[in-house]
Image (tube, rainbow over all chains, first blue to last red; front, side, top):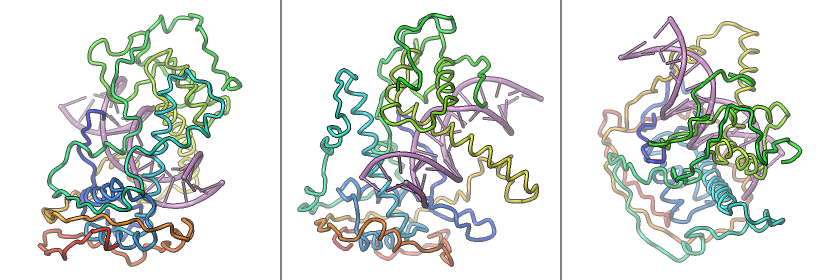
Length: 177
Length: 177
DNA sequence: AGGCTATGAATGAAAG
DNA sequence: CTTTCATTCATAGCCT
């Protein structure tokens, strides 16, 4: 994944599984829908109002079946997962050297990477949405990925695993967590 | 599968990761890692907190490369699949029939209508940002409730299948939302 | 050679 | 907003 190829999802607009009749399954966004939503998100939209949601939904319906609640959930999830990701990364990044006690509260307020509402508030920029056919192959996953963790040389010393070696500081009893 | 025994997969084990390719694909847990995780699971741990995840991950890194998200997913999946299995059994138990169940066996990978949205999407619309004026007063749950609607007659009107519908000026300027 | 299974990863939906 | 659940996608490895 890291190398970025997310070749094919059955996404692709068009029909639903049909299967005899309007299977009320969950929404399966088309690539175009995702692209637009992502653009909006990157533009700073985080929590669209009811009106906005409806309008977005309405517009996106051009690309395929969609309901307002899908848009609502999409933003909610996307926002939450970006946060979650960042939170975990930052914890890991601390190299666990710092043993702050109030880590929860302190980690709550790291700066959002870029454009938050404030910026978008006065900007009126224009974005180009790309034509579908260009399977962008690049930034499709750049935001959605958990832990943008490259395969850095996190080499793990392999010390005679499989043997009975007494592990150094390994204490994984539930009580110690 | 299931708790307990993982026969003898050529897992990372003593083989130390990479050496060469260090294939950065998906995480491949070592037998020791799996053993410990399973042990924790059996001890009753189901949904570790972020904190616990981090600690577990940290400890398990002794046995090989691992990230906290791997631990997160591991528990998520393990729990889900245990549940899933139980449910499946009970369902089968209650009734053996059904024709909708065929997906379980063979057609796991069928691609639902692969009619990729034809070239209908050669659009290049413009998206304009707008002031996010909103701190809407309605709560998120209210919004959701508002959106709640069944997917009744909402047939998925697959757009542009074979047809050439010139699309009605998709205007996704945020300012119009 | 491919199919199948186990399982890592992702994400829509919803609960809390 | 945060956390959990359910379902699905993707893939490695084993099997016939």
